Image 1: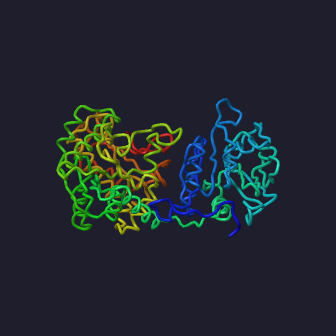
Image 2: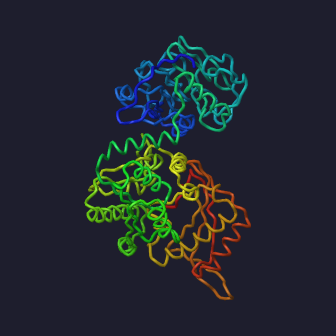
Length: 530
């Protein structure tokens, strides 16, 4: 391995060597910023997305192996555009600027950036003139993905221009003595075929990372962190049976054993037979201490007359915590509460720099202000696919590991624009059962990120069944493909599968007389309707 600008450092206190290496992504507002962090992790290096305004001293404290400056939507010359602080380039660690990040670096160091007469968006052709260190062993001609209007015309003093494209005279550059690198295109997207090789070159050869961050290392690290946080304290976990809460529960159980008690709250908002399955799996198979609470009537009373989606979420989140508090009192008031919060939950709830609150998540935005537990969130920095890998490492069966995501508020947020009632829940439960049964039978379950039904609560349509006029409910089928729920595409389900699903729903559920398909991607829509 080539000599790097950084030296090894010892692991942080209480943490195994698995997180002694990290590369930080500083967010300048780009649409692909999250994806950069994901791609770095896929290379075997832990990465976290942080605001570009993060305190310099915090970066020094964390001592990352390198920094990546993300893209962004602004022109570097626009009023209020994010500025690159020169101190970030003087930390003695490698820096890679991507798109806006490269332009901001060039502008800061005296190069020439100007607004181009023609923007460059989408697939472009890259011509490599000098391979240098960053583009070593890559083809002279390759395609890449661009998304910019400002363009670098001259590299700063001391830099070597490596490549150009049709609209970018300088599309890649480097100063190996200072450890500063920049590329105008996006290596993190699949439309840049050699993007992964460029990131690997930066991480392994330039930053000197050992590329050893894996699911096994996550288990080792989190077990150590949980033990450090909890000590001899008692822990309570809200178990839903989904992969997030299941992996979180097993991680904590692995760390502290019977100090953990799982509480399964049957709020009456789950899918068909799920309550029984959760109890059987954790109490009988995994031997995790488990308390089951029948709270269906309690939740339905609180939701009576409520139609606004955010209010539903907050009511359900608050009622969950109230139920936990009651169980905690019976268990001797455990100090700690486990939650299966994911990184995507944090970002979508406004926890990322500059991120709008798209919707509050049960694990984030639905918590009441007077929460009396200290949170244990072992999955908070993981994306969904990483959680699944950790689940397999812990020995969870594939059927549970690959269970499609299910929202904390359950079916309540899939009864859209109407009150949540027991009758409507039963209709939606039966419809969802038909959809899942047919999708599994078709062998498509693993291909889909999510597949579920939506019931527009107060909507009825006219139909004809048995020569009689009917006035029944509409069921919406929603199925999407995705890697992490940050973006999603509607799934192209086969027509014969859709026909079977619709026929069964209408024949088996008397209250339903119409089935429709949602073909909206994210963006512009969200995956869930509420």
